Amino acid sequence: MELFGIWVAALLTLCIYSFLYQDNPFYRFAEHLFVGISVGYGIVLSIHQGLVPFALKPLWAALTGESLSGLIKLIPIGVGLLFFARLSPQHVWLIRYPIAILIGFGAGIAIPNVLRANIFEQTRGTIEPFAAMHAGTLSGFGVFEAILMVAGVVCTLTYFFFSVEHRGPVKWLSKVGIAFLMIGFGSAFGNTVMGRVALLIQRVDFLLSDWLNLIS
Amino acid sequence: MIKIIQCLAVCLVLCLSVSTGFSQVLPPPSNVTAMDTPNDDGSSITIKWDAAPEDSGISGYQILRRLAGGGLEEVGGILPAGTTTYVDSTIEKGNAYAYIVRAVSATEATVESEETAPVSGSGEWFHTGKIPLLVAMLLFSAAIVWNIYDARSGKEIFVRRIPGLEAVDEAIGRATEMGRSILYSLGLGRVEEVPTIASMTILGQVARRTADYETPLRVPCRDPIVMNVVREVVRTAYLDEGRPDVYNEENVFFLTESQFAYAAGVDGIMVREKPAAVFLQGQFFAESLILAETGNSIGAIQIAGTDSEHQLPFFIAACDYTLIGEELYAASAYLSREPMLLGSLRGQDWGKLFIFGIIVLGVVLELAGVNWITTLLQRVS
Image (cartoon, rainbow over all chains, first blue to last red; front, side, top):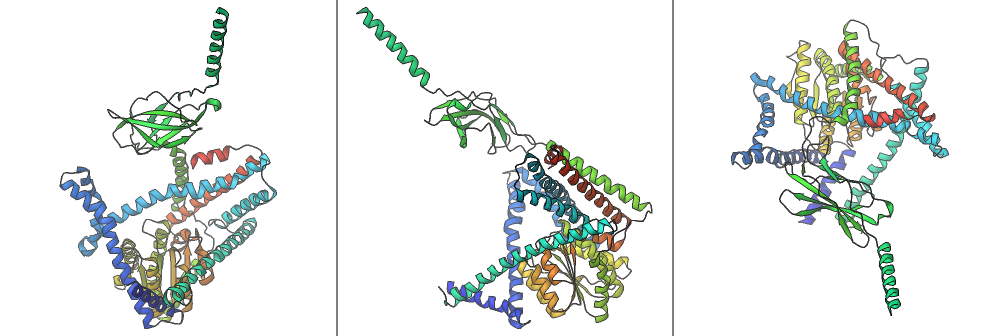
């Protein structure tokens, strides 16, 4: 059975890689199989990890008198059922309620966290090394790093001013900012490409060792 | 004889006093208090006690608790000697617990504190520690609301040129001239995520133009809820343009929730349908390069935009235009020129200017040895 699994995995890997040449029936077969299986798997996962533990079990517990608190689940279940209003053209407007709740909830949760983590924490992190600089505990490289970081943050922030025309000093600051961005993107690009090459090596290793037994 | 007895008695007294002086008597933990942990959901109790002197011989502490009417049970492991606080997160809501702190020495001698009064955990509706964050959010919101009203009063708001967005019309026009479709992917984000919301507003503007030109707009979705919202967005755009007859619901469809299956599916659509323009706007992960590369290989004009900093390099390398980070959020205001969105954009700029000022002032103050800005930021975060 294990050997069968290896053969299936290897052939599907080759089918997917055949896309590198051009679109072909083997790739199409693998693509449709992948999409179909992933949808089926997703549905089963939603039932087992969502519907059963968060809706059916609490409701069942409430119906059997084990825990009446499960009745409160009727509210989210009712809101969720409104998604099915799409099936009826007359009641399709009802779908706006669960969508509004979802977006409102998501934004409410996300905005304070984004403000805290992406703005205030980062601002503090940019300023704090200067306290160490004042105390004289920062090395020469640390001083350079702190100054570079502040310069990078200030210039990059300038690039993202949209309601100001970028000319004069603003233009030059934003130009330096975009240079900082590109240097950052370059390093991220190199880092990620290395990660992807590692994934390729892992796949080739599977083909050569597990499937073809050419290397041990 | 009497003298011998007296000498022996004196020696005995001396030995006893010396041995008492050298033996280590552990002091019991003092001022032990147990209280409901503030600003939580009522699932923990905080126990505090005074720090013991360094030469007390205490090598650690063990927390013991008693449920009303029950026996003592140990909670957690041995805490290090310097500990003065412990948060018991293993309580059951509604039950009252009394606590004892047991001091332990290196020789495993122990001494226990007095038992605290029973305490139970209760949840709070309002997290008082988040008040500075609330104030900051209110100030930020006030700046945005002020600018929205300013924009609505008719004052013109300048928005700088964003090349990626100026190419939107070019891309749609090209697709129309070639008689091919436009592919729009919102990435992998869920409906409540900010990049997905931003992408939907851009999609609304793109849909308005495709409705005018009668260009097919194909939108494969990764999330069924996103698909439903996108259908609404596109349908509304077509209605607004007075072209509901051109709207085809089947062009906005669910593909799969799996990341790479989605990438494989979108790639397949690209190579088979050969859209003339590809929009990749929203939240993307490792599939970004796969999508952008395929779009590039079919010769489509590609406009990408994301706030995922790790994917931006791939979009920059493989796409014609890329909206970097916040440009994605500015796009809706830029394309629609609606006063509300333009005002909101300028309000955000005010926020950035404020942060800019805080950084410059903070650096100057820190170099002068004044650290109240970092202290304030610590409180806010």
